[in-house]
Image (cartoon, rainbow, N blue to C red; front, side, top):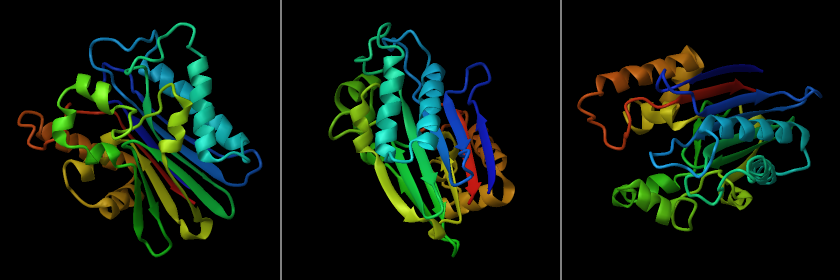
Amino acid sequence: MRTDLVSEPGNATRPNEDFAGVGLPASGQGGCVIVLDGVTPPDGGTGCLHSVPWFTARLGGALTELTLSGGDLTLPEILSRAIRRTADAHADTCDLSHPRTPQATVVLTRWDASTLDYLVLSDSALLVRGPDGTVTPVLDDRLARLPRSALATDTLVDANLRNKEGGFFTAAADPGVAVRAVTGSLPRHEVRALAALTDGATRWTEKFREGDWTALFDVVAKEGARSLVERVRELETADREQRAFLGRSKTHDDATVVYAEL
């Protein structure tokens, strides 16, 4: 197994809100990849004493432990338990009912000798390459399918769309959100490699249209995860003033890429 991991903050003056991890169980059989993209809150508070990096570190840590030790659990069960464990860690001090309570997108994969299981919640991405070179994206596209007018203000998003039926879902304080994730399984022999990415890295394809998912995967596999992030940064910098590409609320975003050859 070969892995390549890069996680870079969008702003050097702010902490990286992403989380990335690769786990190999003590048994030596199988492994897991976990990527979280912490949701940056707007001004106005979150009802929580803790930062987004605090949240993603604890949720990511819980997911890592449960994924490696809970072989009898499904991935939605693992996500549900990890959310509950994280919520319990600050329920006595924070208002977890606040719509902007710390939260994150999730990509979670686990494999053994026979099967690869996956879970995707919100707009981070999982790309899977088969033995014939075909790249298949696994996406939760509910946010992308919402009309742009529905995303006009953060207040409207919080009131009507965030973690609501007909909107989109993130991992926050409600363990029940785990059943909303996109999940599935593949025979292990049908997976040669995979890449998990936050939307700060998928901008290369989704916002700047520099290439499709196969082209993006090729950049990571051939040039490395760092090369993809550097390409994104160059495009962001060039577009800093004119913001020619719609759908980009900030010049740079935290960007995380985890690549694994199985």
